[in-house]
Amino acid sequence: MSRSFDLIILGAGPAGMSAAIRARQLGQSVLVLDEQPAPGGQVWRAVEHVAATPAGTLLGDQYRSGAAIASAFRACGAIYEPGSQVWQIEPGWQLYLSRNHAAEVVQAHSVVLATGAQERPAPFPGWTLPGVMTVGAAQILLKTSQQVPSDPVWVVGSGPLPLLYMVQLLQAGGTIAGWLDTSPRDSLRRGLPHLLQALPAWRDLLKGWKWLRQLRRAAIPIAPGVDRFAVTGTGRVDSLTYTTADGATVTVPATLVLVHEGVVPSIHITQTIGCRHSWREAQQCLAPDVDQWGETSEAGIFVAGDGAGIGGATAACVSGELAAIGVAHRAGVLDQAAAERAAAPLRRQLASALASRPMLDAMYPPRPSTFDPSDDTIVCRCEELTAGDIRRAALIGRPGPNQIKSFTRAGMGPCQGRQCGYTVAHIIAQTQHRPVAEVGFYRIRPPLKPLTLGELATLDIEEPQ
Image 1 (cartoon, one colour):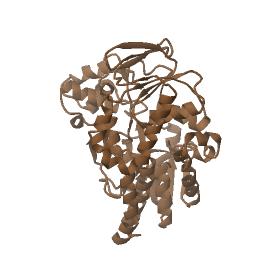
Image 2: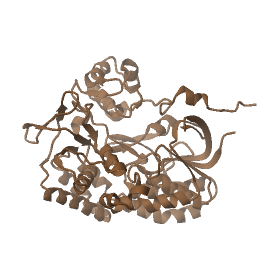
Image 3: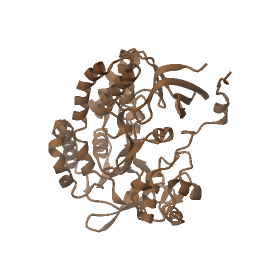
Image 4: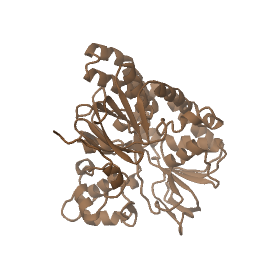
């Protein structure tokens, strides 16, 4: 007989841990499924082991603050099962998962998806060569094993994460060859209309200004307004070529290039369940529609944290607690008045935590060429399909992403479109001269993650009598 819980939470990052803690305080039985080996998510990855070490000091106060939440999470009484991979969700709600090479189905009255965000895929010529990584991947290595690149690194991208990583890398003894800033030249002008709204988050703004000042003091070469760039090499990266804001072409030696073009909500699970989504024009991405508790259009499915819209760790913690209160209200544990009383201070905290988002979105929009790669640029890494392949297929009638998938196999590899979905949608929109919001996204099919036949064979499902 399958296990059953009041609430199942997917992900043990800031949102998932906070939701579990609050749900347990409200007397709910909770199962937390996490793909990672330990709680923390990306923001607080390995925080239980690193926070109290010199490396934790290097990573900063916000990182170390995750240790207290991880400790409270461990003690809250939720059942925590790391190394769990959910590959299907069915109404009921039944979750199919694999853990320790065996499959299982578990059931819950409500589900909180706290699966966070992913770095926006940003294809460019040479991005599949060894020596190209995302800034987020490099930061994972710094957090989990204190790995510092031996050679000077080139950082390409925009937004807070590249600034934070470069500062952390310098403090860890690394060296930076240069930063190609891909934010618009007028990013400050774009952000000014939102400055008053962002003032409640002045500490975050001050932090970003301090990071910039540290980089300038370290005399890091900065090329502003970069849009087009490419890497070349035989077997691995050996050079980086970019176009400056004034049109000049520059080629420099490079052995490690770190790229970051912002983050987007992880929507594969909400897409496969059938939750309603809306197009976020400012960041050119989809996000699930949620109510004040984080509940989606599918009753009993809640989204907390960056999966419902990018807001950062503080906002994720608060939204996790709100989701737990919403789950308890839905279950009848809290009446409307009690739920509202519990939620009121959290909503004020959430508004403060999100105050700077409109300003950041305006200052750091996606780089235009992210969605307009050259014909010879690979966009689907799994199937090794180029932008030219997608453009030619897009001219066959008026296909959408799912027809393009049938024509070319784009999005049919192990990542299931996580690395090419938005790029393919934009290429279709440009080729067919229609809005990308109208084009939409791939239809996500189970299994959500690859699993072996051996794992599937272990699944024990009771037949109806």
